[in-house]
Length: 287
Ligand code: DDH
Image (cartoon, rainbow, N blue to C red):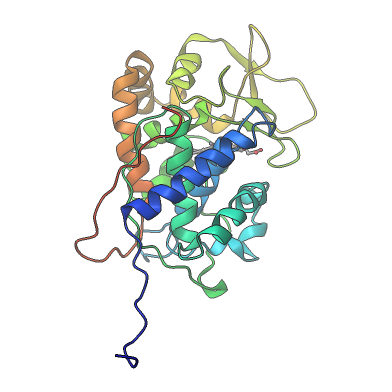
């Protein structure tokens, strides 16, 4: 029947696994970036796309990929994330059927898994939205602040104290860049491998104010090569948060289990999935 409508391409698990593999292979290829991987900055992109969510108004979240547009791309918190978005452009060009919103989150999932973290469940179905859906500045956490601010920001997204502490473990990955946030240095000695070292270092090291002209941050007394933000320190200064820091410092399996669950929740905030959308787990390349 020549009048039949053209068949719509409906991507399946195998198609998304191919996108996953492409991102994983690009991570391998581009290992001259930063500490040897684009993984951390891709995780940060997925988190900043998601962490704008406001449960009261249902606005923000990863459905939309509105950080493609100014003003959201120019928000101070998003400085440097162009590197992550640009890294993914050739992937988008090769698989034009995937939305930016699904691609950015898939890249976060892929990066965590390829950096030897836990499997992160994934559902597809995010739709890109236009500039009108950009969120106002100020929805992401301010590194200079403490526990009250953390609670205000993360309770607004719908997280509890345990989940806040589990999410912070992502700072085992990557580093601060003086030309992006103004802060400087990595949190751990292995910034391209996910471990519970962030919690162990918080508890075991002595932290002192770094003497420099930059924004107020901590350095470890022993090597002066690691850093903590005031917002990181808040989770051992607050008694309730600190209980969870101890749990995760003592038990990497427990951290991985809770991290997987909370990152899955973060990445799905505000996404109107169709009923019956399947949950997938991608096969790691770097296993
Ligand atoms: Fe973060 N983060 N983050 N972060 N973050 C920075 C880097 C990275 C805060 C501030 C900063 C999360 C929570 C918080 C990652 C993941 C996650 C930088 C440095 C600052 C500043 C940016 C730069 O200079 O390049 C604050 C404050 C909080 C908080 O209050 C809780 C969460 C929840 C995550 C997550 O992924 C779940 C990652 C990864 C990086 C490293 C990026 C890179 O390029 O390397």
